Amino acid sequence: MGFEEKAKYTNHAREVWDNYLSTTTARTPKPRKQTKLVTRCSPGRLFNVLQRLTPEQKTAVKSMGFGSLLDLRCRTLRRSLCLWLLERFNTTRRSLEICGERIPLSPNDVEHVMGLVASGKDVVNSGPDDLIADLRYSFNATNRGISVRLLEERLAAPEAGEDFKRSFVLYALGTLLSPTARLDVSPSFLHFLTNMDVVHQYNWGKFLLDRLVREVSRFRQGKQRAVGGCLLFLQLFYYESVSVDGPGPLATAVVPCLSSWGEEEITERERRERELGGYGLGEVICKERCLGMEPSECRDQLDCPPVHSTTTTVAPGPTFGQEGNQCLFVFCLFVG
Image (tube, rainbow, N blue to C red; front, side):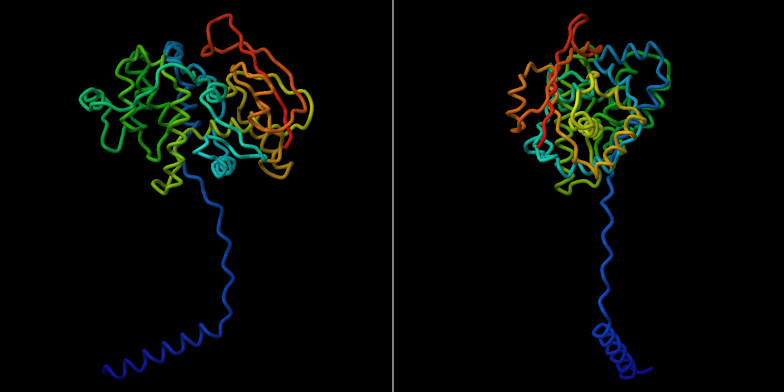
């Protein structure tokens, strides 16, 4: 077929296509599906490892200040709730803007919810590479990170010494407390694991919140597809901060709240949320976390009048102060 004959057929095809486009009714675009939440935060993965720990290993976990994690009962994130909370998480103000209120988040909230101490030395995950060269070699760390599966294999061994302690902290951070967008654990975490005798002195509450803010900010800037940080903290903080039970006496607090929320309790809570019509339709509860804050101060933070208040004395867990001390919690119920 010659060039001119080909051109004739090509022009005719274009005319037919143009005529089709001009006479055909435009299709109604399909509604976009809800954005899926991609995260490496996996409480179920840590839960499975915790079930296999020996008594000696559990003692080692407590000695580092992570004893509250042994009471972890939640195995799955409620991704629809986490996505809803992320859309309302103000990383600049470090607050959740829900139920018509701005609820500030602090390291003390992390301590109340997750049981990680909110005082002590700052966790520093940077320094000269030569200081962690041996540890990088020990954990087969690459530029991508430290393999989570390698850590699982190490934690399956019965020993409870320093190698176990390092492996446990790395695993807990990488799967629950401070996961990144990657599948592997950041080798920068090795910088604060050179001396295992001081791990319990670190301010893990501040570290968790700082990393959560950082990871969510990076996600919003389009620097990563997955959302890092401890999304379980946001989920449980919401459950503890918003009541769906209506007016009346508030339940006694359990510290840390982490131990109160298993799959059965979370399923029941989600059912109540649906009955109300969705998330954010409950009443904000201000729960003071061992801060000694008066109800009036709490009221000033949320800028709304109280309708109910009560006080409850709760005995602390192993990570909350010395034996024999007690924490005073002030509960204030607010309506918008």
